[in-house]
Structure formats: structure tokens, C-alpha cells
Length: 353
Image (cartoon, rainbow, N blue to C red; front, side, top):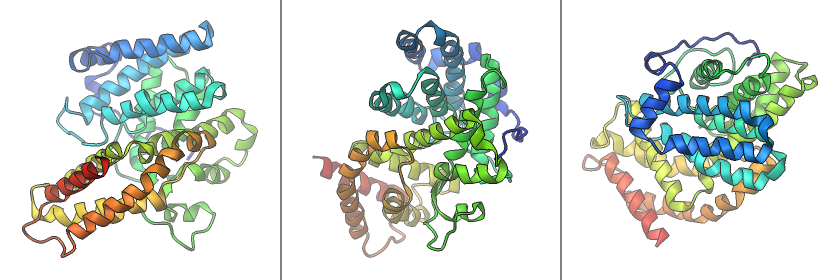
């Protein structure tokens, strides 16, 4: 990670199609018109809480949020031609219109107006790109690097300046980079140098300080970076707090991600070849994510979401055990991925009733 990292991921066809706030607003008005007044209410409430001194930042943030949400909906939502079941505008809204509000209520005055703007923009921008590849020159993933580059362009169009508004650019750079999630299990012999970080599994956020130690050894004397790093930990907790949602919502998010993974792998849920990967993801994969890989990175994130996660622990163990037992003889040519998903959903509904 480098503060002066040059853009490596250029604009794509979606950026060209939605180049500014007017184009974004027109799309939102035609597809999700309720979002425009919702964003205005968010802006007005921010000003009412923090005063007119936040007005300029809030207005520009509203513009950036419109652009990010519209591009997510067109790029990966049901408004375009590359639907992603999990990473679409609804995931951004899960954070914006749900988790972030809960976290802000818990945090109180410890999160000021600019902090809330940065976390809102993280919610909308952190998954802007999902089909990227290539070396980033850092431990962040290619999708995250590309999302940072597009976010920088969105902020510029919205009227933010990289020098005058360094607090926002730096926070989003670190927070989006920190949302890189390694789903591999924790390596028992991993060490603390960055060469070993990729083997640790889980979010990159709690290891960002080690990355900065190598790339920017003087970062601790920069108050903007120090504060941005703290916000990046909170942002990571927002992103992964599906573990704390009510059980059926947790299961639904797992199913959406499973469906997206199969789509990205080129396997139809109606085909037998998808059965085994779906079963592995919804059993071993869920336990690994929930109990081994997921961790809260901030104190306020833990206060907000840890109780909900604890409430889900035993139910998730039971669901995984029951789904495994359902397919105890293994999946065969008569099973399809959709059968595994439906069984998982049926078991979850039984637990919830």
C-alpha cells in the first residue's frame, strides 16, 4: 500500500455510462426512487447533528453516494447485465441503512460528522469492482485496488480535493484496502511480517499497520493516517457484521454469496457439478468464516455487533451439522446446488420457528 499509489485500474463502461451525479440520479429515480429522498434525509440529519460547518462535506458526500449506488446497481445489480447475488447495491445499503446506524448509535459522539461521512462512503464504495485481476503491489486484492481507484474518481467528480480533503481520501484508501478478506484458514506458523500476512486469513484491516510500517515507516507522525487507520478497523466490522444479523438474515446472506460464487465459477445451480461446492461452502465454509476467520477489529464494532454474533453461534453449528447429516452419503448425480441451498434454507426456517 502506498499513499501516492498511481491509478492502475481505469474507468470501465459503467463509469462511462454514469459519468456524473445527474446521470446517477436519473438512474436511481427510474430504478430506486426512494433512495434519493433517503439520501437527502441522511444529509439533512448530518447537518442537524453537526451544524452548518459540515454542510459542504455532506452535500458532496450525497453526490458521491448517488454515483456509487447507481454504478453498483448498474454494474452488478438487477439493472444491468452482470448480476451478482451478493455484491450489488443492496449489500451497500445493508451497511448504509442498517449496520452503520446501529454503530453510530453505539458510538455516540466518538464518531464526528466527517467520520460518519467516511464510513457511509466506504459502505457504498468498497465493493465497486468485483471482476479485477493482476498484481496490486500490495497485500490488498485486485478488486479492492480497483475500487479505490474508482472511488478516487468519484470523490473528484463530487468536488472533493485530494489535498484539502486528505482525511477522506486516506480513510477510504485504508478502509477499502482493509476490506480485503482472505478466506483461507489461519496458518499455524504465520509470523508477523507482511510476507506472511496473506497466510493468516480473515480481514486485512487489523494488519494494515504492519503494511504501513514497511511502506511508510513514518506514518505514526501523520495524524490523518493514524485516524484513518482507526476508522478502517470500524469499516471492516461494518462489512463483516452479517455474523450478527438475525439468523435468517445471516443465512440469506450466506446463500447469496454461495450463489454468486457458483456464478463466478461458471457452474449452474441446476447442474450436479454445483452440489459439492455448495455443500462445502454452506458447511465447512460457514463454520470457518464464522468461528475461525471472522474477527472484530474495533472496540466499537465489537460493542455493536458481538452480542448478535454470540447469539447465532449455536444455531449456526446446528445448521451446519444438520445440513451435513442431510447429505451424509455425499452428493451424487441426482443432487444439484439448488437442492443443497434449499435444504439449508429449510433448516434455517425450522430453527427460526
